[in-house]
Length: 156
Image (cartoon, rainbow, N blue to C red; front, side, top):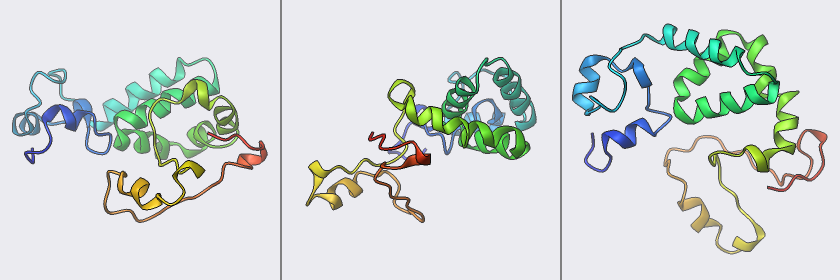
């Protein structure tokens, strides 16, 4: 690790965490022995397990929440799953399911995935932007939340 972050931090970083796909060598080098199950799985095995667990969810919203939680744990596996069958999975993370997810956001929000810049922070936008943990930002989407998917003002 880089001295600032622990092995435990690595497992909680969705951009770096590979779960059981870390090789035995990586586990030793990164200090992951004992922090994850001993079995090493390839990404295809992980992908199949995610498909099975997703199929057990009864509603599209339940599947949306499950996929959101996967994204919070392991972004590589999340995007691997979405791109494995876009016709099947995109309706779960975009229209039509995301409309219901937006309406129920207050009940299903798990982990922040962006910055919230409110009128209360007027004059302090740079301070808010400095709190973002990634320095190499290449793309920004800004919305006032007023007409998301034609649902009206949902606020935050």
